[in-house]
Image (tube, rainbow, N blue to C red; front, side):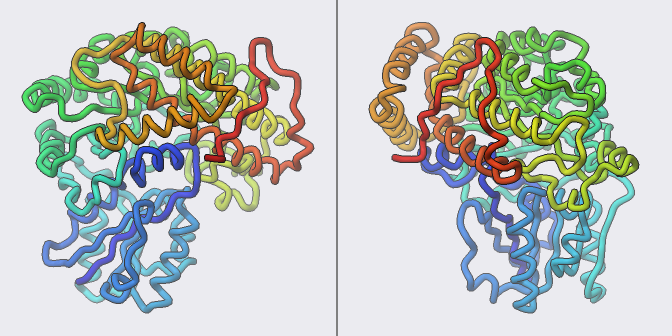
Length: 532
């Protein structure tokens, strides 16, 4: 069998980092770990060709060469996913699809013409698909009624990657999350009982990346790295000597729940193992909204104090925030702004709540008759209004979203947050605390950054140089981290413009006329970063 494995294009999103990646000379943020794992589950006798379309489009000859097209996608990739299926069908190729998007909305893939739906987790459903294929089945939907033992999961096919096209590599230790947040689809996809790999398994994956020549940053893509705290501590205790023996060839970024701040021993182990950052799902500082959406783990301790504890342990914080929860009071956007100003989180991801398929939120809103007819089409779009009827006016939520995003990513405000956040982080003596960029590319990135922020924009030049000198004096070991955050601003200053245009198209531009700001929130007009 000749199989063509494809990973669809991402649209421009908050996390696409388009401008920053271009400055750094890479094509994509991280590789698609799911389809690389699927590749390991396919028969050794098969001939495989893999293309991440975010790195480069596949040659047309590969379409003629293949017998089978395999595509994995998330919700946000729906447009390219649909086009790839239709192209394959038009060329007379068999199409097999999987991943979070078809697992959540299988009818979409069927409507596009996919022949085989390999849903849920591939360790169970890929073998079922292969058996059906060997028996000559022309179509099939393959689902699992249980969760696989990930300690039996094969090593991803990292050798298929064009590794130097990525900013980071990716590994996974666990699947699932013990919490019960109403809006989250992780517990629907992977369950509430975190399942972990064996320590030797993960170390073997790291050794593979090391042997392939990778040096730099790795995203531990667990949806909640500390979901099984007992097992993750065991992993870290084995990972630390491995990192020491290999002279810290990697550093790590991951996602975790805010209760990480309650575990000083775990924070210390993460620092020793080479973790430099963590993404937290903070969502909102409004305690009543957290209670409504069942995010109780964020209500046990003050969130500002939790952020400071994590910074003091040597970790940079990335965080997600959401507008549109039921019962949310007016001004939620300004309260999020104030929280971010207090915690100095550099890159807060602000979104508008979407009901995702099969979540508790989706089920409740459907029972209440509040889902919009096109709810399944709208979900997953980072720049769409709610796909349900909210409890306060959608226009008010959209306006608060645009204004908060615009003001938080006003260039001077953003750079100031980057400075103060880096000043608050305790330097880690064990590893570099930044996304690694190879030296030659780092020099190019630095030159472009100095030109754009230190020379080309008069309104930023003074601030850029003052803050750079302050960092060099007070936190020289975190200077590379600070400069990387500054460079990433080039993406966010473009993205906020795109977000305002898209939401404005849905609401009507008149709805986005500025309202009086909250005290202490900047209203300076932006220096747009689109022109070079």
